[in-house]
Length: 386
Ligand SMILES: Nc1ncnc2c1ncn2[C@@H]1O[C@H](COP(=O)(O)OP(=O)(O)O)[C@@H](O)[C@H]1O
Ligand SMILES: [Mg+2]
Image (cartoon, rainbow, N blue to C red; front, side):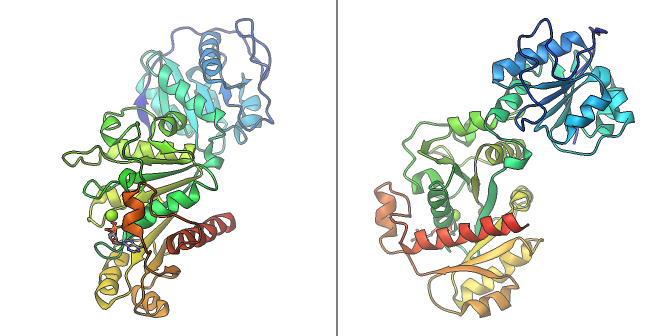
């Protein structure tokens, strides 16, 4: 989708800048290498634009490759984690129809003519960035590359919802976050304004950091690193939740940006999804790689889970986690039409652990610790096989 970040070309220089060559005004245009998977690719012949992009890249600690023509651009096209196409060469590039790929942006000076949006679409760009207005946004985009965050490095994203009210979705989402943080960078995103707050469940409620209210004015692209560093966290576990007080509401733009930045900046993103039927929540669920439904295997719990599962359109991504004893897992799977990924007994001492600020998983070998570990093993395996 094409967003209007942008605009026009004033200074067009005829200077040719060859890929990887050193420019007079930049000390390090040669530093990037086409083999370096973190080197963004800049395609332009506009010297002023190039100088500006190199300056922003330097500020972001990125070392770009530079291509001055379509041929050179195509060589680096697929491997670069990010491609910035100058408005001056966008039309030429569109003519040679480079392969579609994510992370392509057209960059222009000043006001952009409508025609440029058509051209940007033709090169498969996600948006047109306007300088100088989009400077900060571009710097964030470039900064994210330093984290190794590119399209290939996105987090496994797992939504968790309850098959019935109080089934234990928030608790399990928090448990996944705790266990996931032992393996890499994890974040639990609380999409339930009426829930207990995942920061509280994880014992992070007293930590400084950004909450949803601080992100609802988001209008541009969020930097993955900036988001990760702004969240309340303990070691590799972060949480995005709600400020205490009257309930907030999820804003569509902020939610999409948060999810995207969280995925780029972590290894695991867990989203605690309320059961409320809501188009934005359905969209968030659809953006998750997997959706876990926590089911209490009683007659009422399963009846409710059947309805919950029927609401989520893609049955291949949905899996069940059963909490407590009751109806056999095979019967629950048959009734809902959804496979069971894990079963767990009730967690003893849960309320106490949460009250102590330890989170629901006190030990790896606890009921929740084991179940969360098993679920993550399977989900990472499924992704590797996908
Ligand atoms: N794994 C568990 N073992 C024991 N009790 C649990 C477990 N998960 C949740 N509970 C109980 O259920 C209540 C609701 O849990 P919660 O995670 O908030 O459910 P949901 O998010 O599905 O509404 C908790 O306060 C706790 O008493
Ligand atoms: Mg909940």
